[in-house]
Image (cartoon, rainbow, N blue to C red; front, side):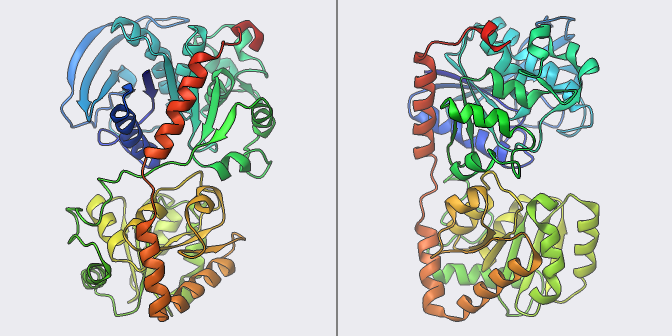
Length: 460
C-alpha cells in the first residue's frame, strides 16, 4: 500500500497541537505494519531539523499561474518519507498567519505536481483538516481515492468566493453550493469533505456530534448526507507510546509504580513552591473551546482544595487572568508551551483538568492517564471515548458549577487512598496505542482503493 499523508504540521518538524502529534505517530506505525508511507507538509522557515533538498524549480499547478520557484526537501524518520514543500509563502517565522487560506491554497495545489515530479503516485491520499482540502480535490480529479480526516471542524479555511476562487485552480462547477461554496465563501474544509471517498473524524463520539447543529459548524447537512451514504466514520486517535512513557521519559525521573508517581508529585510541588495539597494540572491552549474560561471562573473555589498548575497560551484575557491568580500561593501559571515542563505536569499532578466545550479527540487526557494522573473532563467528543467512569471524573453542562462539582468529586476520591490508587492503576493500564487505529485506517485505505470512484462530473 502506497499512502501519502498531507498535513500542515508533523512532529518533530512542525507542531502546534494534536494534529502534529498524530502525523508524527500514525504514519510510523503504518510503516511498521508494512505500508509505504510518505508525509507531505510545508517547509516552514522555523524547521530546524536536517532536511535535504532534493528538487528545486518552477512549478506549475492546476489552474495556473505558476507558484514560483519551489524547493522540495526530504527526510526519513522511522521508515516514513517526509517531503517538505518550500513555497515562498511559507518562508516566514511561525506556522499560521492571517493569510493562511491563500497560503494553503498554494500548498494544496502544489502537492500533486510535486508528487509527479518525484515520480510518486499514491494508491491512497490521506488529507488532514482544511489545509489539505485542495490536495484531496487534486487526488480525486486524478482518479486517486482519498481519505479526509476532520481534526477540528471549527476551522474551515474560508475566504470570500470572488477573491479565493482563482486561488483554488478549480473549474467553475467545483465552486457551487454543492461543492466548495459556503455562504458566499470558498471553504477548503468542504473540498476535503466533498471530494474524499471516505471522511473520518478522530473519535467515534465526535463523528456523531458533528451531525447536529450544536457541533456541525453549519456543515451538519452535508455531514448527515455523508453519514447516510456510509462515508463518515470515527476512528479514535492513538498515543505515541515511546514519547509518552513514564518508565523511560527523559524529562522526568522515570517511574513505573505509585511510589514513583508520588515522588513526581513532590518534585512538581517543590518546583513551584506549592503546599501539600493535591495538584490539579492543565496543559492546554487557552481558549473558550478548551473551557479555560470555566477554569478561571472556578479558581476561587478550586484553590480551597487544590494547588493548580497551568501551562499554555492563547486568549490574552485568559492569560491575564491566570497571571493575576499566579500571585496566589496555590496557583502557578507558565505562559506558552514548554515540552519538558508539560511532561513534569503530566507526571506530577494528581488530577488533570479538561473542561472542553468540544473536543474532537484530545490527547492530553490519554497522556495524563498513562502517567497515572486522573482526568476531570466534560462529557464530549473523544473525552467520552477515552475516560472511563472508574478512572476519571466527568461532567455534563459547560458551566463553572458543573466543573467544580466534578473537581470536588475528584478531591473526595483523593482522600480515599484505596479508591484513588485503584483508579491510578487502572489509568496506567489503559491501552491507547496506535495499533488498533492504524489497522482501521489501513482497512479503510484498502476499501477505498478497491471501490470504483464516482465520476467527478457527478459531483457538479
